[in-house]
Length: 485
Image 1 (tube, one colour):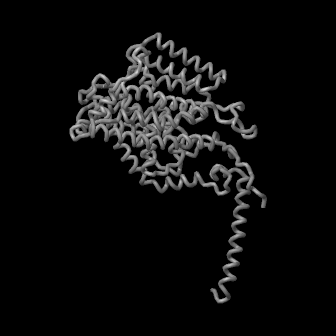
Image 2 (spheres, rainbow, N blue to C red):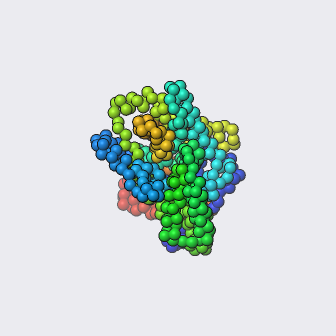
């Protein structure tokens, strides 16, 4: 038997002829994309747990020391001459969330260049599901608010899905979703974030400061030029990013747009000069991967939890909770998140399967898709942000909208958790099949089914195991004596 102890693990299996096969909804991902997404999802899951903890801390703080919480949230600081004399709450929503949307911009660029959105056929499912998952909740809110004589300004609040919160819920309940299902959630959230940014930029921009907007555009152009010139050094890009953010904030457009714009400018395809691997193994990590690796912990571990700490603090009482279900605006938010998101995402996915050649993964059922769609009703970070923008002129209604977002997200989380738990055994089997690596080469066996070298390695392993079992059988027969039946 040949010595395999020093064999270098292969970085990718034999390519699969996926283009010749009908598309499979929620099917197995290509290995490189699967590994990239799993790395991102692990960080999002940790961030989701921190987000849950921060939201819980905000609720406890606001309900045990309400005056203290409000005084901190509304405390102003910063240079007024630069338009930065902001409250702590605004620093969190305008500043910290810019980091979150910078990472979202990188995710979107990766999906557009090398991910599920790079080809129209592959992009159809998540795009249709995400758009339906935004249109239906907006319609549910509009009908509910109009029927009760409420304001239509909050139509966009229930359209946003918080992937970090959704994955945090999954981490808490311990459901072992296979990579394809979690990747579908992540891709949905990427499209959702893009649409949310467009909604914020188009519908929640009142006045435009042309000079500041031109300055921000010039900074973005300089940012792009420096990237193309391969200029390196955080001391160049961080000050430029801060100036871009300040100008965008003063332009009248929400400052998070600057984060998305800069994220979209990073290169997502590696070049040989990026280093990291030898020529046989290809180029190292791309520019976007290196930056995302550095910034994602800041976003998931600090920026988003701090935003939740200063945004989720609402007073919870019987009167407040009853008001959520009696006021048309807040009822519209709850119904939009719980019913609208679930029906919209499920309906969009079903339509993709019904009217295209795509088929559902045979290991899954439509109730699985329904449970996954229910997770889309967990709207938190962007939903709270849009709620502040929509009802900023009415603090009481803005606070009630926050409560409605929390209630709707909690109901969606419970509903999805129950539905997913019913199929937990199936998910665990799929996840185990996806991770099994019996030959120990670092590539899951399921990705090597068409590789002859894999089967030869497994034959050697199984022959060695068979020889060992025969040896043990002979020992057992010798030790048992002649009287053993």
